[in-house]
Length: 228
Image (cartoon, rainbow, N blue to C red; front, side):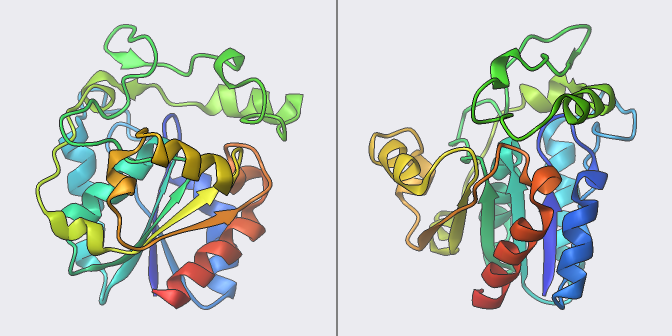
């Protein structure tokens, strides 16, 4: 099965290189999605541009796909399920929850000169970055791609309730399945609260398991694809 891989903020498609290698060895075809504005230098890119890139990848697949979204890109994966429920066999959300209709995509940090740069490690101290040593942190920060304002502040639009029929796997890296269930029950993810087929898997890592535990993450995704 084709497994579409969508990286979160400040990352380009190469973030999935190690995961992709493992997925191929497990018999799947990884398709890292190149997101406009995250790696191509286009600071004028918008959320609509990124959604278009994801949907083009879904449409290009020969069959149904597993769509994987990391962190903020959980929303991009969910938007794919909304726009193509008949083509998306399942959605895997890695360390992220989809935004609901009408909300900004990822308006989390300050905008500077039309982009949202990586804010440094302060906001991520604790479980998010606990498994990244100083060298890994410096490597991440030096390669981080500032996200265009038109992406970060783009408005999420969801229109097809068939998205709630698409199976969802929530991969829990820096938080536990128990915590995720509590947050969803408490109203922090209205979209996942309505998902009809929601499973959880615990992955002992920080927020970026594609860097720190790529083989374990790939195995989780391969199992999800097999189930889908």
